[in-house]
Length: 323
Image 1 (tube, rainbow, N blue to C red):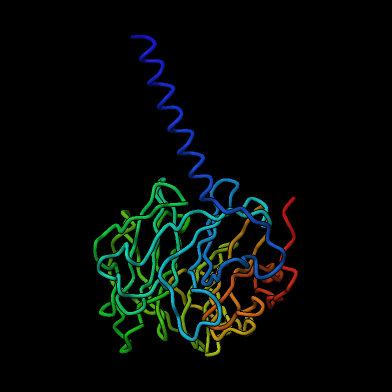
Image 2 (image 1 turned 45 degrees about the vertical axis):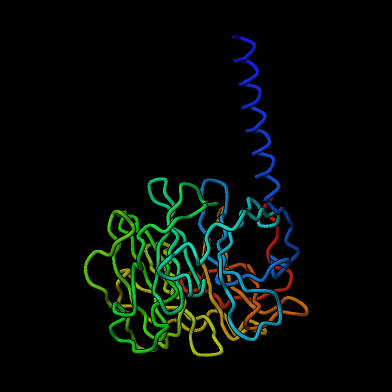
């Protein structure tokens, strides 16, 4: 009996070890060598979160180079602890994981962590914004609702079919979660405690000088709220500041110029290990990069004494490894 039990335990342990080894084989480890930071795949629309010592980077995924239109069917996830050595994980989420949107496109998304759960807010081009949930930052993520969280009906000031895209979330110091999104018009709303439903009415961001195209992103520093966003087309990144997340915002100017060889830009702003970083994409992979075959880059972000942000310097060298 003891021998049989011992054999069973050893057999189970072997299975676990083999499974673990197989899972490890699914990981791809690489070093970034300047910008773009990922050169073995085409990535766009970067968003990042910090968990303990690790930066988790989430991107959309353009098909192989020289595309002539957007061809995007899944999302990707990477992690690093020094901004140089990276791990790529198995695909965490695909457009076909949303039955209501499986004929759509895997456009920009944003992950937010709350109470040990990870919520992936994604846009599907014309079918709306969805949300998926996972127990760890690498996924896999599963559709949390079985339907869109937001649709074009929520975009009350818009008439075009791709108005409901580019979600970005923010949890304030009081625990209130917010979601911003939109194309041509910028919308926002509170999220309920469950993170998968809207609390109250959908509102619009409006202020003088606000020429909004897409890609809203909220971050906070020293009690100031910063709204960064893509403006005009080809897209630059502009920003505004406010004392309250709902505004009023004051336009502060261009933050990032047109990113080489790409009509679009899409930014994330993150503080990591005491430094601020600007994540964006360009079409910079030689020789197949372009507006539909994009690549994620990272450069430093610097503040002035009055809280305004210095113009981003896009570099080929990228950022140094954190020691």
